[in-house]
Image (cartoon, rainbow, N blue to C red; front, top):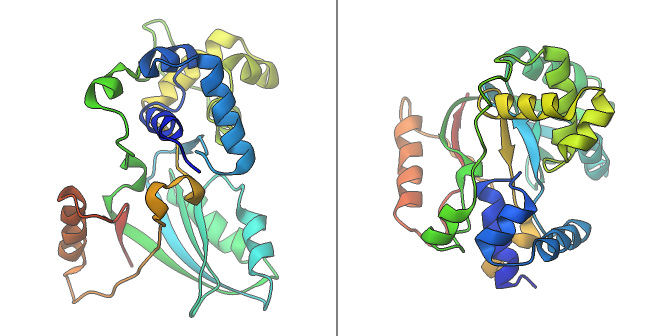
Length: 269
């Protein structure tokens, strides 16, 4: 059962997933140790937020997958930890899984769809729909359990320090990204020890990429959504040249305070 304190913490983490516990404690007027313990309990139950780093999206696709009979769950688990996989949904109808993949370049997207999915013996068919426009970004949605004053007290990510390198070497960026994808709140000291560089260099690299090629997200698990609401995906066919205008109608419903507004809207090929 979600408590008001749980929802307040989740909203704060949506605003800044890597905010220090001491800062969150001051913003929420709560003991920082208690906040960290609450998040740990939520993670173990699978009912909280799954904080991780993701690449800034330049290429995305919605992939409908048909699997060997009875192998949908096994197929999903094979891809659940892949860094460009955003969501995997088990569905009914003409496909078994719907996978949303997003990455910073079309080459990585093509490699995943053609090589990784194409080499899976559990997959009998895959239909790929390239995303042509993102009208509503799901990660922008907020719980809004904090007041405006409380939300303003949550510290935002700091820009890179003046002496920090403006570019992060690709190999170092990939290593740090891998660690932050697994745990978006992983301490810089732990990352520095794993990748073999100084703590300051890791801090500079995170701050530099956070304002460029990387985004930190705090998506909620379905069990964390309040009021018994659940997320469902719906695909629509539109009249010729009307997909964007139709998508904007969904976006306007979200702004109008509709009871169950769409959290993400895209157009695809």
